[in-house]
Length: 116
Length: 113
Image (cartoon, chains in turn orange, yellow):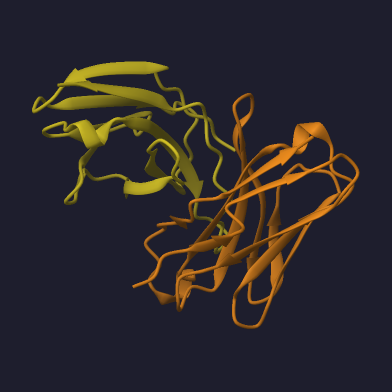
């Protein structure tokens, strides 16, 4: 079956711009979470969505936001980009726990954002 | 979130077993121990997870200490494709669904031919 799909895979923006990243989860998965990966900070949790509702949120400024649609696809948005936002943004999906979730997260290949 | 401690790097030879240690002395009773690995230029990949008992799957084995303060991921025969960063993560299962994973620095495994 198809894995988690993230688009775009690579993008370059300039400071002050905003960016929207998209994530299509594995069919049947209703939980989608987002992570930021940088060489200095490693993998950091951004937020998680389930049934169009944000359930968990990491320690990121309000410039980072997300949403989930009724088909479980998710988008994240970063406004007023800063140089430090350059990173690999990873999306992961999973079955909900009430369906016998094993706890496994399925990650996409990520969207690499470069801010100039 | 409970924290884990792993060696920064380890080296192994191809076809030999690899034991990747993880310390989690502050683990709580509701924390599951998860292992993920990240190959170069890819997203993390689930390897295995467990709560109290040792676990085996097609990829690896997970040995959990009796007091749960440490665990060891065992790759029975390392291949070059196992070269990756391995993350040991505690996931709190209390209070229902919680998909917030706290990744540490992980262990960079190098496999020599």
